[in-house]
Length: 272
Image (tube, rainbow, N blue to C red):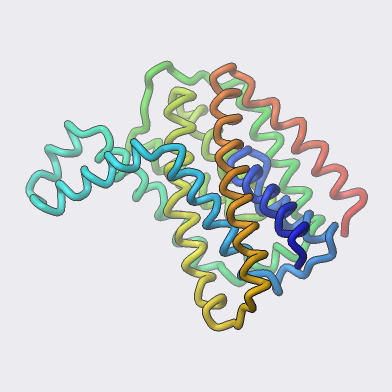
């Protein structure tokens, strides 16, 4: 893989990880177009995923810091669990993130091999992009309530949606934000919860593949390529989060559906 490939795929990963257009789907199609074998680039995927992890940390640092402090407070005094849940909004978010992450963790671990095979089928990925587009389009008819936050029930619903998004071509941010909007959660809180909930998922996927990276030998040249991809993914990921937040605020989230329809149709017709 060349530096140019690393930059291009880093941009694709960073933009599509948080734009509701499926990062996994675009990586599959991008690698197909660039004639890069998916199985030979596990290490690169680990690095660029870590880059997108950093972009969320940068964007929501204040919230992440308060979530961390609330968990530390619980560790100091476990008896305050109920009190913290009732009075500390960031601790409540932490609990809901854990709840919402369970379905994806179960599906990811139990069906890792089966899901991995889907990454080798660009046609299937293209069809899933069409489904993502349909979900995004339907958000035009959602009725989110201003100020409404995530509840126990909605955390489970969003978590199940996130588990479905393990399928390449189904956008994680797209389906989780959409499900939150359908559940009546405000646009701002829907986006924030979706992006924060991405942290354990991205970190978990990185750890699962990290063992393969550690067992392989990486040259200094490859390390430079991976570093460049990571930096590019972090920068483009940060930019994509800002774009999503802006369009959500303007009630234009469904606009992404048209892009998914176009890429999905083109993928079916011309790729694979």
